[in-house]
Image (cartoon, rainbow, N blue to C red):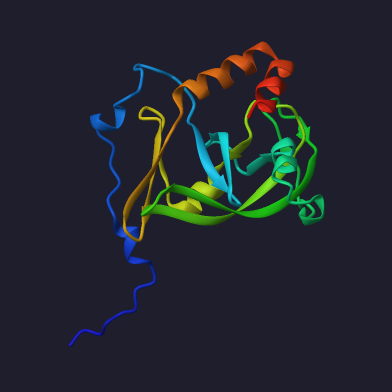
Length: 186
C-alpha cells in the first residue's frame, strides 16, 4: 500500500487562475495603462498604488506613511539601497512590515508586506513589487488591468483603476511638482 505523503502546499495553491474577455468589461481598450489599485494597508484604505512586476521591493511613500500616523519610531533600518529608474540611489527612510489586504470578502487575502519608506516625489502612494506579488501568489494581467490570486475560498482579484492610472501618468509626465500635488490630494 502506498504511503500517504504529507502535503506541504496549502490546497488553495492548486487553483487555476485564468483571464477572459469578461475581465475586460468596463475597460477602455486598447490601452497601455499601468495597473494602479486601491488596497487596505494596516487598516488604511490607500489609493494610487502601482503594481510593478519590475520592482524588486515594495515601496511606501513617506507622505503616505506620515498620513497613516504609525510613528517614525516603527521604522527599522533598511539593509540596502533602492535604485530609481535612472539608476541613481534613492535614500530610504527605513523599512516597515505592514499587513496588506487584497480583494474583497470572502475572496480576499491579507499578507505581511515589507515596505521601504522613501521620501522622493512620485505620483503613487505606494508600489507593490515582486516580493508582495510572490507572497500573494498573484498573477498579473496588464491587458485586463487586474491581478488574481488564490484564497481559501476561491480566486480573489483586484481590478485596476484605469482613470486614476491615466491621471498618475499625466502627472508624472508634467513633472515632479504636478506629481506632488496629485499625491497630496490622495
